[in-house]
Length: 175
Image (tube, rainbow, N blue to C red; front, side, top):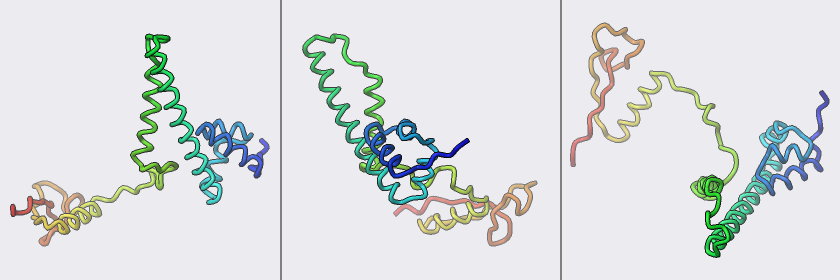
């Protein structure tokens, strides 16, 4: 299979299509490249990443303007009894939810700074240590309880001042 180069002309075509549609796959197809090419290019090239962000913001502004225009036209049709059944609400609701997600991020668009799958799960000991540190920072007293009978020492127990114990926190004293 022959690899297609992501030339400046293809980048411009992709960005123009993307700004008009906010559809990365469709814009990649319009530019004649695979969608994986544009995603890889975005992660590797800061200038393209900035242009992508600008195109995405332009696309969202267009989407918002189009939704408002459609909503006003639908209200006018209802008011004039041209379309007494109203507008197709489901698609409008989906689009509004998308715009609300954008608004919750203070108008910031684009890729997440870190994907959810890249976080390393802490070990039990690391989690207990982090919990103890957090409780201490909140001035919550920590009690070490004896390990339950029959439990393995050290494998699943925190180390208290006298060996393997269970960590317990009590509420801070009332003021």
